[in-house]
Length: 498
Image 1 (cartoon, rainbow, N blue to C red):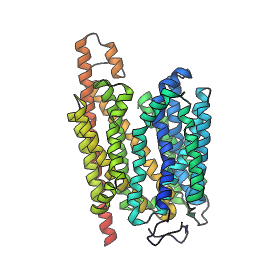
Image 2 (cartoon, rainbow, N blue to C red; image 1 turned 45 degrees about the vertical axis):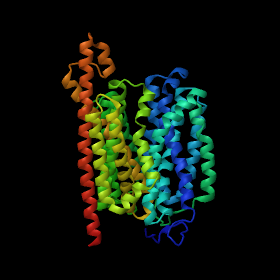
Image 3 (tube, rainbow, N blue to C red; image 1 turned 135 degrees about the vertical axis):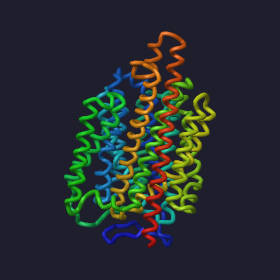
Image 4 (tube, rainbow, N blue to C red; image 1 turned 90 degrees about the vertical axis):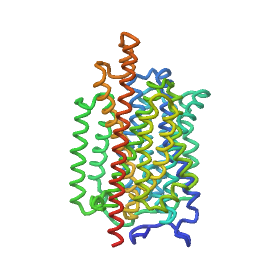
């Protein structure tokens, strides 16, 4: 990676990377893991929060959503601020804000206090998630960056797999506040390590801050993510969801117009003329689409069709994450990406994700063994495609915009996550409604309203058929998107060579 003359770069070794780069990677990945664990642990704590704080269903939903809503809305702005004011400074700020938010959350006495604390933690999370990837890009050279990004992306899967286990253990021995207070020593340790080890890097150009762009992107992204989050609850055609989505689209349209007109935009729209960037963007959205949408369906499949309890169901999805962890911690995923190239790695990875979804749909209907095969195959696909696409996005963006690149990567993941739940959930509901004439909004409600064992069996079969159809739709979408993304990247590489 060539350093721009306007970029204040960290020190390099003879091999092109920072001399303490692997130790630094370990430190910042620990900080990232804390952020990711917090979300999955909170899922396990919902019954305790409901019981001990007298939290309503709406309270619990806002406890979950306040964090992701604030984080998603601030990702682009946080990335731009990191580029301008210093990635180390923003990383330390994110750790401090996240630690203070965790303290307030752990000591909260009411649902309102906990919701406010979670929103504050979302600010810290946005700063962390953008600056971590930007720092990785800065301290590793081209040869080692794919492996480093593979390890960085593996932390997401590790957080997903370990969250339910850690949460269950802690809640068996401590009160619910401990799941937040455990973040504080990690945040303190991270602050000390970042201060001592991580080099500062920032864009030294004298651009004027794009305040209007920051405000528009934050409002627009928050409105769109709010619509995506609340869509399943209120209905996609409800006024609340449609108005939020419309506001988000209009404001983001204004953001694009503004960014095209000003001299120093926070997000250069000309990136989207780069075929390599567009191909990686398409792939990133569809990997998140397939993975999150499939997990949304899997949890229902395991609980409603195969009859597992919530914690057991969560643990049975862990092989997907553990496969990603195994392939990337051993370096196999990164080695294959370097050997076959980014386009081929994305094509192969997305094909495996698609095949895993299809295996779950066709073989997992009556038992866990078929589903297990699909989860492992999906995990292998994610291990190949996610690091390849993150690297493609970051390498298509100038080094001085690394924070914005990380913000784009995080925003796309959030968008793909919401899109997966929305689209595959809509396919499931449509297929279920076409097979059985029930007015209930969920399978448990439909079963409760059934008059006979035969009707309950018919409703359960219809729901299982809806799951199979939606998983197959997801498989086709992921396969098609992966092949298109790979083709765009291949064409971009040929154009660069020419």
